[in-house]
Image 1 (cartoon, helix red, strand yellow):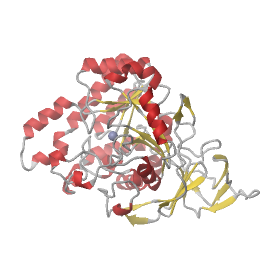
Image 2 (cartoon, rainbow, N blue to C red):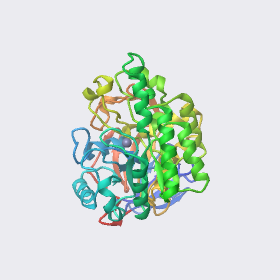
Image 3 (cartoon, helix red, strand yellow):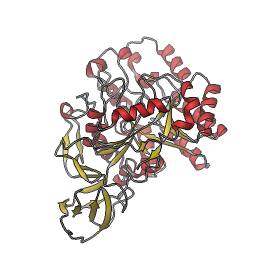
Image 4 (cartoon, helix red, strand yellow):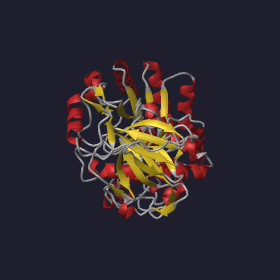
Length: 449
Ligand SMILES: [Zn+2]
């Protein structure tokens, strides 16, 4: 395997920018970090020319829809998109049938993906009635199980609090963390009944799926998790108030954490509404300027565990249906690095906090010890990006399958220029290179990375 020496780099190690400017790689592992290092033997020299050298990003929330709905994405396309966004590890949620409700289904999925992915991957299990008896076995194959507290695309919701308690208790007993989508069905149903088919308000996703819907659901999830002793991670938090509930629970000593998504930081409800044809229709809905600011300030204090894209691809003709019939979600893994840099710029947050939220933050949250950091012994998953270079998003040329983006034509900076996976160049100058070398992080009941 090629040995590499990166020199003249501005190194972010997952926590901070550090003084050292050289990094050595052998056999896919980082072997030395320092300054003034010289080429040894047949090492290949990579002059980073003062640009950023980052750990490969960890996207803790994507939907690649394989197996079952490959026409919308699939790993071959989705993982190419990931590289474009600087992502070298994806944590993936199956939210189309078959849900990952048994070890057999999860193992079959892992078998199906072998040799297809250009990035490392780790699917979550599903927390549904059918998976309860299998949770101890699932615990050996995945880092957490996904629970939908409210209805969203392709997956139901928990019927009542008694059911939620039973499910969370079963997860706690199996020592499995629950990752949750929190929106309250009753609150959303009441809002929909009130709005009715009002021609102006009827297409406001932020009113149907309101702040209150998320906050009440987060509160209930936290209360139940504390009562039954379950580890809880709230995904894609869209409100400042919901995020604060999570942070307060953590501060009180409970194993409760949360992440947000880039769109809640860089877009607000008015902007989302102004961009027509449901492009930013997503669950939870995009909220308000103060929510984005509040979420960004919690990331600046490193009180949220990170940022995951919630990459949820749909063909454009489906998104172009009338509001009520258009699916929720949109592709975004292709743009993760430039989007978090844009979030830092928008909110005046030091960029290292946003970078931490897509590297070491999620890696620590899900115990991926080899990922999200530049340190001796870690996987040589690396991203080179130039923060001084901006360019327009060209949606038609993004590698994931949808070929559209709600961010089309937006000017962003710090697009990844080169990405290495396990010390091998996987992406350069806008193109994926080489074969699919991504590995599962959990495989055959052992953690392989
Ligand atoms: Zn999702």
